[in-house]
Length: 373
Image (tube, rainbow, N blue to C red):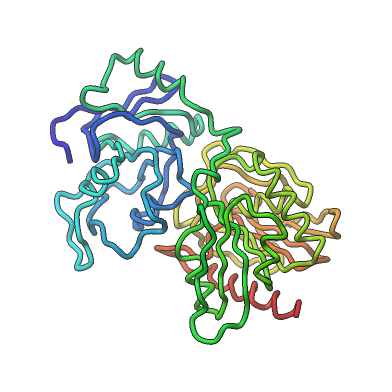
């Protein structure tokens, strides 16, 4: 930690939290959100879905296991900024290669430590996720200057961000063992563990750029289409919604997660909206409408699909239903096309660093592709 270098986390409503610089000294702007995971901070920081967000850790002590070279979910840290209460003085884990603070400095991520993250979390819960900024060192200005800078920042509503995080070129993750299926995965901000978990099931995964056309997808002769997680407002994804509708017309087996759930929702005629403070963490309960079973899930989303728990509705592709909902607030957590081979969930079945309740959804995707054959 950059000891004794003052820093401030400033919210657009004028609330200011003062602490010390952590990571790079400087300034950053983004949407302030909180995540409730007590572990897995490396996976959180490298999740492309957090692009342009300042992430607040609700767990009080962060950094105990340092930073390793195996657990990244993408090629870089994507968060706009990072806020913690009590950073570990030194990492202690056999896989650690350097401290979290060192990695934040190396990747030029501006952070703050020593603030009351519990109070900040309660503030965001009550008033909603909002624009904010972290300022430290020479970038620390007057309260008025910092609030003005924050208010000049971009809103998350209407933000088209998936193009910033998608792969520039297509690449292939080969199946492990005997190849059983080929899947085209549209990269809206895909995490590394997703194609890895599909590969373990004998799936050859072709990860394709965001702007791919249906012809480009069909050129890999896919048995199924996967829509990944990603950042931004789903209302900005008209091209990907149209692509999804074309895939549904062809009865191509389809599985979407997180951002992909919202795109499928729009393709099925549903609207999307911004949640007050979103769902972010690795302990969020989801109820399956058909079985009543509860899964503890990993999530990271600030938008949701319109709908009611268990609701059935008509689409251009036949009947569909809201298959899952959040036990905490009733928000839509899954969709299923009853008259076609398509389903999606708002959470992360690839969940690194856990939990693993939802991992069998990849097996469900395999079953869907088997039936289509």
